Amino acid sequence: MPAKLVLKMHQSIDGFVCTMTGDNSWFFPHMDEHVYKWEVERLWQAGLHVMGKNLYEIMASYWPTSKESPAAPMNEIPKVVFSKTLRSASWGPARIVTGDIAEEIPRLKEQYKKDIFAHGGASFAQSLAGLNLIDEYRLLIHPVALGNGKPWVKGPLNLRLGSSHQFPSGVVALTYLRG
Image 1 (cartoon, rainbow, N blue to C red):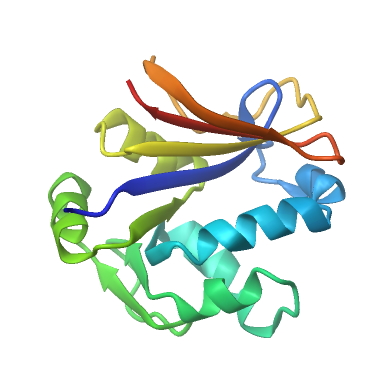
Image 2 (spheres, rainbow, N blue to C red):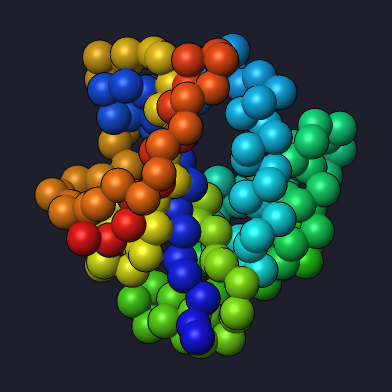
């Protein structure tokens, strides 16, 4: 059975993943031990992380020296970085894929048995959703309204609720399946 592609995104209650300038610091005050525990349990379910170049570079500057609980799965699980311009990937294990995302994701699904986690920046998530490549959406909704910013989806999606979980910090985890 091929792996599922699972998108995990943090977002505001009005659907934005970051401000127009790319700032996402607004969600960290709500990241308590319960949210981290939930995240880490799910991160270990992945056999592969996929992401775009911009988010890879941000994560590569943070996770290798982090002492936070998600650091172990983020550092140890292999990564695929989709980029036409990145020449090397120092935060590994990682490899760079320059091919068409619509062709590469199905190939990766066939190669892996465990879930493939897509970590979005907004543009990467929009590409995956727009091509209908995502099998499961794990959205962490933070009790913050930004008013404007970058959404993770551009077009309509018909999804069905798989599960929900509320954390003491006010964050709600919603898992949706492709409709």
